[in-house]
Image 1 (cartoon, rainbow, N blue to C red):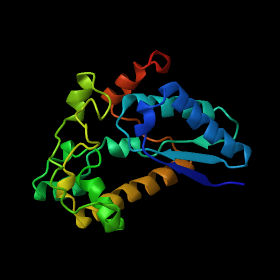
Image 2: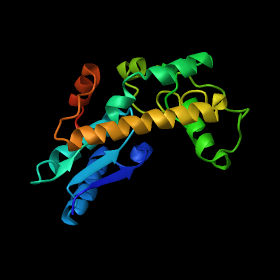
Image 3: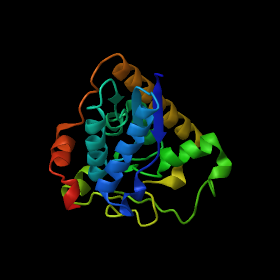
Image 4: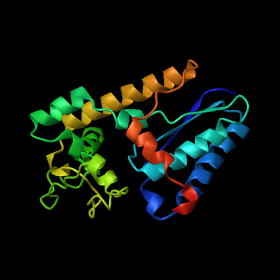
Length: 209
């Protein structure tokens, strides 16, 4: 049996389990599909957490040691790469794209676009913008969203979300995902993350966290 399996989800629960445990879990999930005859495994993440990226990287390295099995994480490069269409739309709305990070205008907009009933209010009055610059925060040693200021679970401006912005976000993310998967399945290695992110990940020891 061939084909791809997409294991979707955010990695926010890392605050409740250890990163080594999470890495082992990703490996075990991939291995379970390999035992069922699957040849490809794509865990889809959109995290900027260095420890989460390291956990997934270690799991995929081990999975790729299994003969005739291929495991890739297709989305991190897109997450760390500026998207011109999204940036232009957010700038038109008076937003700073680099500060819309998590449960923000674009992600909340995505939920509005898919099903407005999944969002409590179109313009939550208590959701004041929470602004952070990931590059600077990571340099300060703030790796988690909470450390960056997301005490209420978001970084950005969810109160500025619109279905139009959400549709664009989902379209761009979906296109990037499909292109990355096709690229990998054609026998290519996915492009590396930016150098500064790779250097940061390299310094992380999962067993010290």
